[in-house]
Length: 299
Image (cartoon, rainbow, N blue to C red; front, side, top):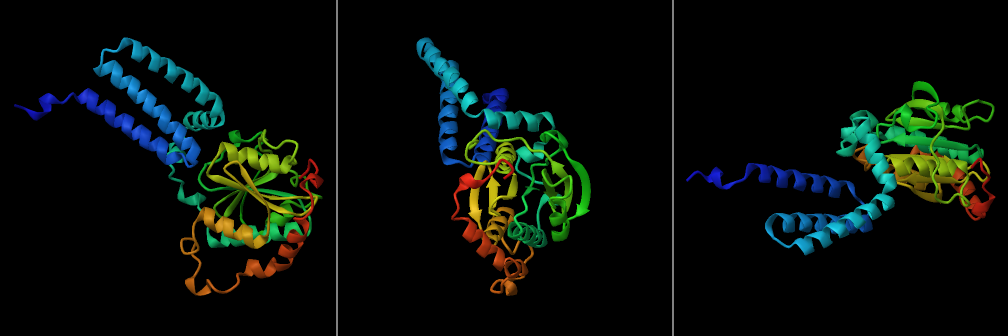
């Protein structure tokens, strides 16, 4: 007899698509607790499908359906931010972001990291507030911001970043968007986070807000009040940090030194940004002992 006669192609495709969708979800979830919740929910859904298809258990089927419905509503409330981001990415057709395949033009290099660290260290030393968004593959677009700012499209450089955040310029209160080795726009107004409203100022809330919505972007914050450096990633803020710590975090987030193109022979030598920012580290470390409540709304 024909082997394919025993196989229900529709059922086979259904199972394969479900398995592929489940694997995609598991690959995109990084937090362990969220992964446990997702596993439990998918187990309930699979159990309900199996009982309805292969077992005549009407009462058990109704109970599992009710549990699945309650869990769906609970997860919709719990994951409202993630679901909103999913709908935004699907609506704008950014499938590459969902699949975790960032375009090459978004990938930073060792030069990009050094310039970001140099600029942040100098701004910290001079106590000039700054907010730098680095797109690592989220494909940020104007509609993702409250105000898309002024288009720059310029080569990334330390001096240009410092000038954009000069207090006598009209763009210093907004954020600067960086993709790869280019400054895309300046004066960008970011959505604010709802967490830590009484603890953080506007700059830090904006950094948390954009990284909560897009997990493949990071945000560097320089406090105008204290000069402390902070880094926001996936809705979490690490502060205060030194220039050397900022460089370590950036290298870790965008790739190791070899993938960034840093020669192996220079691994034991201090980089130029470390030399330049040695005094910055001392200033930031001294300021880190101050209370976070000193930050004003402009931080």
